[in-house]
Image 1 (cartoon, helix red, strand yellow):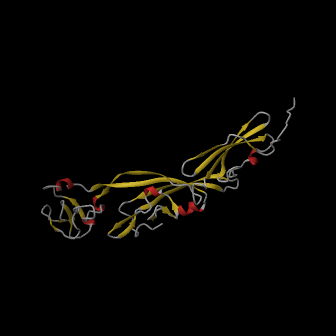
Image 2: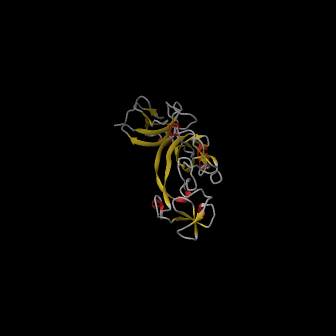
Image 3: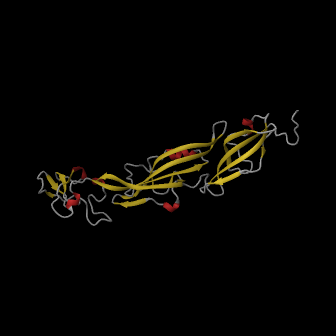
Length: 284
C-alpha cells in the first residue's frame, strides 16, 4: 500500500512545538528546538551550524541530532547557544569566577617586612638593612639587629643573608634555623562567552601582563563585587595587584565555512597583595 501524503510536504524544515530555553544567570542562553522534515530532503542542508534561531536572533545552532520518524518524516533537533543582548553589553556574558585562596612557602628574604618595619608590622624581621653589628656567634658574619639574623660581610641587601643563627634568648628561638615563611596566594579562575572574535587575540596578548582594574583589554574579567580597582601603595609607588596568567579558548556555533559565532574564554588571574613591579611585568 502506498504512502498517502497530505498537508505540508515538509520540503523545508518546519518548527515544532515544545522548544526549551535556559539561561545560566550570567547572560548565556541555550535552546533545544525541533524541526520536522521530509525524509527525501538532505537534512544537513536544512539545518546548519551557525544558523540563527527562528524566534531569537541572539541564538545560533551549535550542534544537531536527527531521528528517523514514521511516515517518512525526520525530526531534526538543534541545540542553540547565544549571548543574551538584553542582559549583557558588548556581546559578552558577565564573568563567572571562582577564587582559590591558600598559602605557599616563600624564602624569608622575599617578605616585604624583611628589612622594615613596613605598615602593619611593629618591628622588622631582620633589621633595617643598613645597621649591622659584629656577631658574637660567628665572627665571620654581621648581625642585622633583630631576631638573630646574620649576614655575610656588611652589604645592606638580602642576598647576603646567611640565616638566623642565634637561639640564645626570647623570640630569637622562634626564628632559629628557619628561612621560609607562609605567604598568602590567591588566584581567580573564570570564563566568559563572547561574540567578538577579536577578544580572543586581545586577551591572548595580555597573558603575563598586569592590570589596575578588573578589566584586561577593556574586557571585564572580574565581577565588580570583587573590586574595580586593584592597586597597592608601596615604597616604590602604586603597583597593580592582578596579572592575567592563563587564557584558553573554545569555539561554538561553527558555520560550514568554519567561522565560529560564539567563543568561550577560560582564564586565570593571579592576585599579589604586594603588587607587580612594572620593571618586571608589563601593563595590559
